[in-house]
Amino acid sequence: MNYSKDEIKQYVAEEDIKFIRLAFCDLSGRQKNISIHPDELDRAFTYGIAFDASAIPGFGDEVHSDLFLRPDTATLSLLPWRPDRGRVARMFCGITRPDGTPFETDTRQLLRKAVADADKMGVTFAFGTEMEFYLFQRDEAGEPTRIPYDRAGYMDIAPEDKGENVRREICLTLEQMGIRPECSHHEQGPGQNEIDFRYSQPLTAADNAATFRTVVDSVAVRNGLAADFSPKPLSGQPGNGMHINISAKSADGADVMPSLIAGILAHIAELTVFLNTVDASYLRFGGSKAPRYISWSSENRSQLIRIPAAQGEYRRAELRSPDPLCNPYLAFALLIYAGLDGIRRQMELPKAADINFFSASEAVKSAFKTLPATLAQAKAAAESSRFIADILPPSVIDYYTR
Image 1 (cartoon, rainbow, N blue to C red):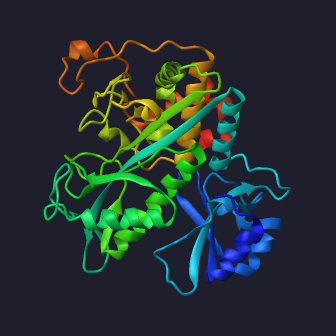
Image 2 (image 1 turned 90 degrees about the horizontal axis):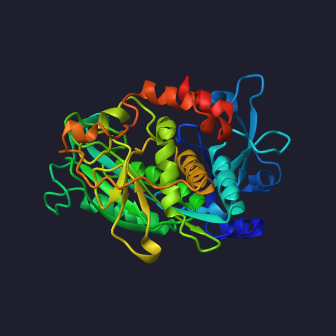
């Protein structure tokens, strides 16, 4: 909801809000924040709140270390897990240099620019995420263990599924924050869970994805548990994915989805290091419904891009390679640009791969290109990419490839 600055101040006073978190994400997608008191809101709106950028990798050095947070009033939300007295609210922020110009390494701003560039082409995007995470027990000292919270399997119910109440608490907390989960269930791995989001415009979807991780971590701690979003928490068990559902419409009514998917397939190898950011990301590929081959098909969960059985407004493409450690702002921006490139160049969608890659013979699979097999290969693909160089600042490319 778009609040005016005066409405924000009135709301803060009426709701007994004593702390306002000014939130942003670093280059890796990890959420950061500064808490200010209500008396500082005027300064935040007028001048921004300064912070030391040199302490955040990729943001600058000690010579040019001052950056400013400028709150986005449309993102005001109470944090329901904080005390009722002296309540805490949060706003996501844009990052600027001291002269007020946008900071080029602010990935939220990069996503804003991608949306604006899509608007110029008459294309509007929507995104929804399906994010998986494990719940682990903590030891007597409160430290996370690798002991799963339960031993349930895919879509099991209580009492085998001990995560049911935790997921419900997460979903209710998100709803209190104005975020709409679509569904939730136990996943395949022991202690593994999934919560899916209804599609929304790109910036909102990225804000929701960043918020989701914070809510899950907070609710898990409140229940004496530890949440783990890493791509391969347990050897021999399914990894955590972050499936990204993408849809797009053209102002002229043309069906742009085939060309959009073709664009993503054409550039996916160059994008992979930004979607799969750690060594363990590459241990996930090729098993437990995680893709390895660059392909697409309808409904088939062994594919990189799956077209679910949905019609009308629910028609979408599901990209299955990203994992939850990626920066959602950067991921969505790159997927927009890859899709736009496919639309601009009217790329033709390759023939659907209506095969099961998990059981197909090597002779069949050899006809398909694969995602990078290691983090080093993914870095090399991005570093040599003209497409990436044209859309990302050198500082962002260097952070991910060097």
